[in-house]
Image 1 (cartoon, helix red, strand yellow):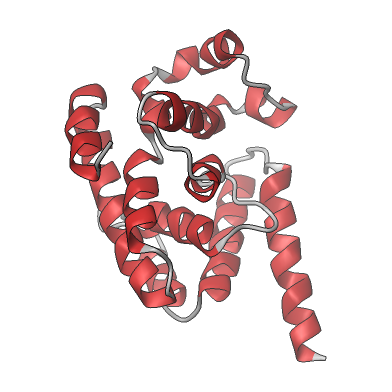
Image 2: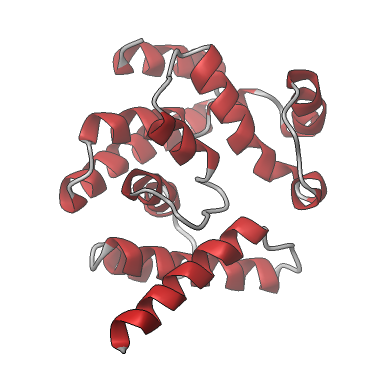
Length: 192
């Protein structure tokens, strides 16, 4: 399925606000891909499909994951909003025909991040966080940091996300901590 077909279908399946966010993430992902030498077509597709799991209402995420045989961890069960990433992988593969493992992994980790993320996965994570419709406190600084280096941007994004989650009294997914720890260890190794 071509990108335009995906966009047309998502416009029908997603609420308008979510659809506009999706298009913005896809466009931002292409910009970041160009900046960091990542495949722009893959970035456009992964960005377009990153929230395809949001076609299911949030209240139904756990039941839909069970129905599809998608395993959930305890943090996902406690914070079901995270589940849309795994649902998105299912829909990207089964309804949009995506077979590229890098694109699927990028969709899978766009909410939590993870250790060993590909450059494409980092681009999608960051594009989701800094797309032009985002207006949380500190987003402009984060936008600048993301353009100073891919790993640097990821590190700053993890710090921002974990601080927000702690302030809200929410759980931090182990994949997020693993991604953060990996980048800190790499940074320390480079300074030696």
